[in-house]
Image (cartoon, rainbow, N blue to C red; front, side, top):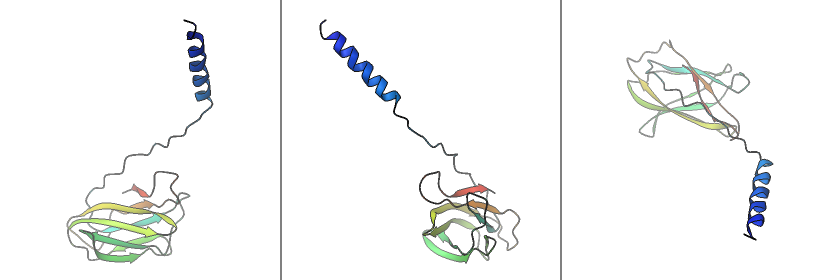
Amino acid sequence: MKGMPIRLAAIAVGFLCSLNTLTAEITCDPPLRLKPVRCICGRLTDPTGGRIPDINMVVLKNNVVVARVTSGPDGKFQFRDVTAGDYELSVQSSDWLKFRYSIVVTKPRNKCGRRLEILLEVGGENCGSRVIKQ
């Protein structure tokens, strides 16, 4: 019984010390599940809504590059002549977090109806680059 007050004091000190420790947790939205597209096109934006020009992008099939484009001055991009199938859209730049997303192309055409809005993020402090609108 003599040691009981000391143990309780130690537990209380540990509890009080833990109250001074603040932790931050970032909660990310689940990735947007993309509907099949007829044309792979859209726009690259930064967290402020600004357009991101001159970014090299590739479409891969089984990790093999099948098409390449560079985003225009307004951040827009479009891959032409992509056949039907399952692909990955990849953006990699030294200034932005890597972006890689699965895309299914059905009934392909070169006219874009539904555009992707891709948010590229800087650094690793947040949820990372992702599709924010389709």
